[in-house]
Amino acid sequence: IRLILPLLESLFKKTGIKKEDINTIAYTQGPGLSGALLVGSSLAEALAFSLQVPTIPIHHLEGHLLAPLLEKDAPTFPFLALLVSGGHTQIIHVKKIGQYEIIGDTLDDAAGEAFDKTAQLLGLGYPGGLALSLLAEKGKPHFNLPRPLIHTKDLNVSFSGLKTAVLHLVRAQENLTDEIKADIAFAFQEAITDVLTKKCLSALDQTHLNQLVVSGGVGANKQLRQKLNTELSKKNYKVFFPRLEFCTDNGAMIAFAGAMR
Image 1 (cartoon, rainbow, N blue to C red):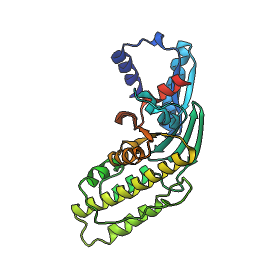
Image 2: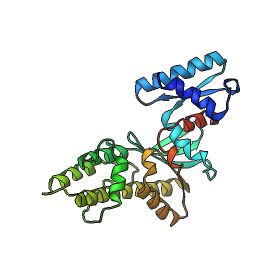
Image 3: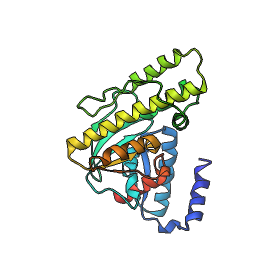
Image 4: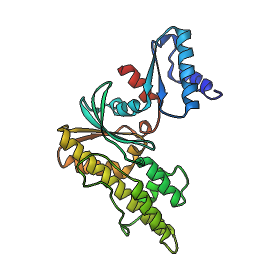
């Protein structure tokens, strides 16, 4: 509460928008931390009441799904979306605004969670997905890790086994040097991006769609972006990414989802 009111005031000052210019207020209804959601929804409802304008509660994941539509080069409906974050790894058929079908999901750990826990095993802190990706850039292909469910026809993913394999690999090292850490990070990132890329290709083939949107925090991963661009272009599929600041949680995607509603 101490932070959100000054943030709101600075927002009006920076944008030049006046309160009376607002005709609708969109806010995140969930999922997420209850305290943060309560503060946001309370402010939104109170401000809307004072301005006598309606509110639109937005599902957090819908905001991520629609974030790439903020770009000039945006997909058209229908399209597939890979929603990949700390809490979710889903392949979704986006038919139009408000019509979403989950056709692939994680059976256990989300990709972002696997990144963070692997980073923790390597002593990179938690959350440490970005640190792990940066470390992987220094690594070499000295280790091979499993790619769970990569050859199954369904579109589900599973990363708990990969995480366990990393744990065993770390414990097997007599001396966990920085070079070995980088090689393990490299192997882990290759495994997880291979699985995600293969599942996205299978989803596009099965649905006969030709556009893929990538959203969520892990969507900022450089290796995932490069791999999807390379492999999808071979089959004339097009992939769309939001700019990096729109991959992580942000207010712009919620406001946009509200405007589209």
